[in-house]
Amino acid sequence: MKLRRMLPVLSGFLVAGLLAAALVPLLWLPGDHSADHIEEQRLIGATYMTMNNPFYQELDARLQAAVEARGDRLLTRDAVMDQDRQNEEIADLLDLGVSALLINPVDWEGVSAGVQMAADAGVPVIVIDAPVKDESLVASTILSDNYQAGVQCAQHLLSVRDSANILLLEHVTARSGADRIQGFVDTLQGHEGFAIVGAGSSDGQIENAMPVMEQLLDEHPEANAVMALNDPSALGALAAIEGAGLQGQFLVYGVDGSPEGKVLVADGLMTATSAQMLSQMAETAVDQAYLAMEGGTPEKEIVLPVTLLTQDNVAAYGTGGWQ
Picture 1 (tube, one colour):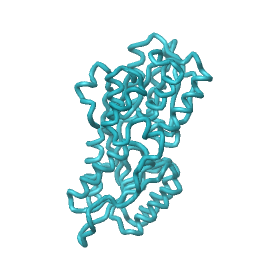
Picture 2 (cartoon, helix red, strand yellow):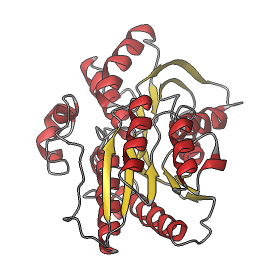
Picture 3 (cartoon, rainbow, N blue to C red):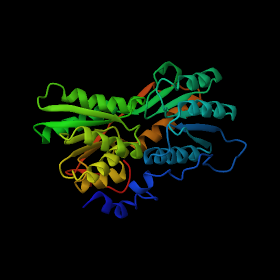
Picture 4 (tube, helix red, strand yellow):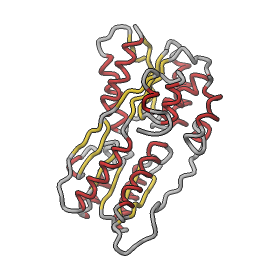
């Protein structure tokens, strides 16, 4: 089944649809997605690199539910891939009197200014999904094993092909994305016949990945595999591959274990996705935030496992939701 003909089927997983909705601005509005203010409630701030990604939308929903279950409020902000804006959001949240900050950084170095403001204010910072460079400024970092996600994808490629000419879709300013690609590249080192022939930056966005992949296909007609740092980038790559009439010739790898990614894996259009444990990430982040707010000592870094989903095992994990 072609990717474009799959869109009506996949729309059940994303309210606005998969590819069609992702290629236009998502109707997510920044705000305080919480219950009405109560005097005794504590405020917790959250800012993400982008809400134009179903992973962060779902993560925010689960964080909100966990915070509200404790009687408090989550104030959510969207940095729209702009680190200066994210630092301003951090300053605004501090001015609002948040008791803790949950930060998913746009740029692992550039976020230091914002994190320093929180440290100066005595507000604990919990970093989620992508680390910051200066870990001394944060109370706890909650990550997937991003390097291992890349390793898993490379190991699968080595198991199913004797050789490959590979394209990379990267996001170099997000350490999580860089680690995934590095794990993939390192695992292929020393394996004759496996070559990285081209790379481009998608910033983890489907609308960026598609034109970048189109250009890479023009420049590298010998390519027959692509490693994308996340599922949205893999979906953009798939659209470009289909547009070039190359479906069936490419192996396509991603990271996230998104519902739409799992459907494409089940249908053989996407080769594999290394699934993050989104529910566990949200629960752990909130636990560490409350531990810090209540004077305890959070764990400095918590690395959560990832699981490679292929056509052989994806049905066992279900395709209707996140892990």
